[in-house]
Length: 315
Image (cartoon, rainbow, N blue to C red; front, side, top):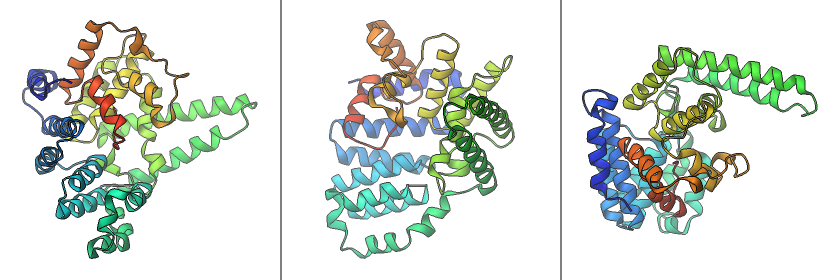
């Protein structure tokens, strides 16, 4: 396991990489990485402190509030359990995850409490707060629905594959225009609710399309700007960059495709994404980990350990 100080060191070395100063969300993601390392070590009170510091630094992401809720429960901190759970719902905690918390043994002791009853009763109204830009969300929803309709036709009708491809290309062009005008439509701009499947549509478009010719560098730099603003989560940005590299016949930088091939993340399987990591030597592993730590991501090894613990996280 890499020492946390190494993550902070590489983050400080990447100032010039992202600008002349350490951007707000680079600090945030570094603190989240610190919390996750403590979770791997089962140092839950220390992990809780790291989450508290991260959320005081920046507005958090739903998955981080969800993990912080679990961490607070394992630290026997009742007030923080309910505080983080409420924030998780406000930031787009999906209904299925809220119900899972209700069924989990870890949270059964909280069920008789008035605050738990209040959260269940007010879930819908709290959840609605996670849609800060409903007009853009509605536009993305319609694009996603049309895409799904095209792809639902029988596979023998190849013409509809071409229609879906053309529609996806148009949606991708529109998405780039949205990114240029208001920013990347991630959780902080459009939220997760109320169309959770659709919330991944911008990411799906980004990983399946090549950056526009002649704008590769500008598009990449724009994504890093959105990362610094908190509009694009670091794990998603790393995945987009890795996919672009593979599309262009280059090696992935952050190992996100490998990690998804291992855990079938978002429905992807080993057949579609062979475990390239098996072909990397130690120098390549060290190079990937160095790049990951610049963004505040866990090392390949630590990310694998965290996923095995069943936390709600990406790679």
